[in-house]
Image 1 (cartoon, rainbow, N blue to C red):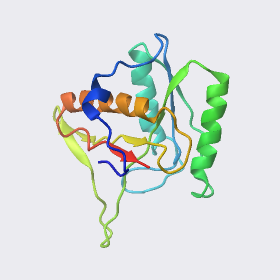
Image 2: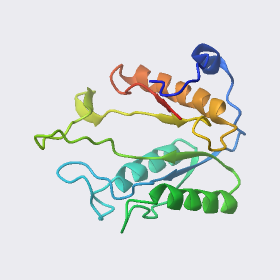
Image 3: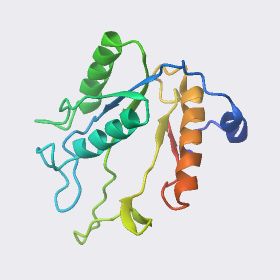
Length: 179
């Protein structure tokens, strides 16, 4: 889902080799740390909000030999406003502490409430179990922010998307390319 004026060559980007060092490390974090699933949209208990998803991702990466760190700093409380700026500060602090971090995953919960109060549930079944669908959101420099590596990031995102679709064709929603 391309929300930009760019027309990337997706096939070339899919075939482009990844440019990570062999000892790549990953930072998992949350711009909207209090996002949660049903019944509440927000929850301050890290055992009941999106932090649990980040914890599982971090553990899975570490279990598979990829060094990963989980930052659980709350960026969206007491105010939702400014959470992206606060999150960028946290990311920069983490990158300064550990220059081996080459991938930052900002985990969100996708949520939408209809006018009648019902919540959209973006889920699929994988191996007989309900699983939240995944949507990758990739940014560009079109909105005026400096982002010289957006095409490399998109290449990586496309490869991740391809692997998710191998697990189950309905596991990943369309990748979202934004300004």
